[in-house]
Image (cartoon, rainbow, N blue to C red):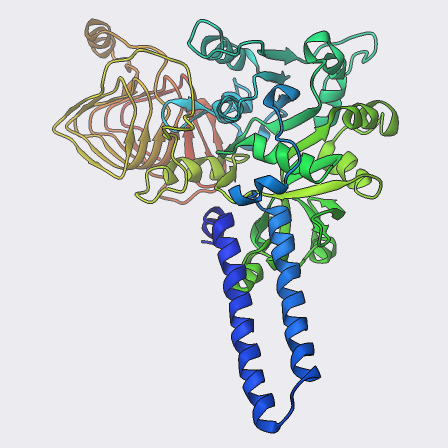
Length: 519
């Protein structure tokens, strides 16, 4: 799959590919030397050809070094090492999340559960902590109650996550005399409305502002990103990766020169405008074969700004521009030093039901490109102190079972089973994500519900579910079949407790699916 190739791209591999390409040209040059000798052509012709090859190889190597994460041996040539204390991070909570609906029906995008035990906000928050950045603002607007609750439970001073002289602050959209009745109008407007905080006394030593999104899945050391920003004396630095034709129109695309400077930027272009943004991405240091598959340079929506430049852009240069990707970045490319930073790891934009579903199930693969566990760079989340999962006479293949679950005589294949989930006798789950539950029901409570003809939390006996997402606290009765056998792509069956989005059945949070329901 094309996306897999992007995810597996790494800087060392890219550098190796460039070295291999240079080596093949050297071999080609050697053949020419022999030819010249045999024909009696020597001297100037040989030196000229060798010089051309060397120049071409040097140019590509230079661009690769500029864009890629710097190797340890390059550190001596760097500017002064960036200090995390001089950096503040701003995580954008996103808009209404319509493409992730119904998972965003009652929660903000960054609060959407992922991986069986985490929430999307845990990814940028953990990246900040692991990068040493301890000053973090989270800007929220839509359905922010569960997000605020999770942040308070997870990233406070009593949970062992020590921010020292730093802070984690959730900032909700507010109406002020300056903004009138307007809420956040876009990414840039959201930062503009709270830009006064960058001049607060606790941020007096801040030099750079990292702008992050709350709905991406990746692991990054932001200080390498900031270091590249400082090494190139950039006003703005954009994290980028090569992109294929199938998804390019969903991203901001750019062209860069040999120094890595952005010379042209287009936000989500279509048709002829999209074709106009095609470039030879081997300039990033990837092989010619990969460059042919990924002919675009895409923005990840992650930026570093010099603090004073950010304030100037938001307040005076573009005071009415509301979006970074669509307005401020394209306009700034002509006037300011805007640099590209090649990110070489796994990255996924969790912006749609399909991408969310695929990213979750990909976590179960033996050779998964992303794992939540990394001893040196862990992904943090709320400590719940749940018991180990109990599994009795079950078949479990290629799946992740979170903590506090009860599985009895069931079959689970290629699934994510979230915290506190209950799967009863005869349940068959395939290609499914079960988010889990916020609470347990006692055996007595469950027995009383069954006796009254009601449905307990969890998945009832002999139910079969495939290609589905089961949201939190869902009550699925006995002998239920959710397989979308008619291959419906989109359907609103919310009165029955579910939607079908992109062919995926999504059971609503707190929904009840009656015994014997067949889809």
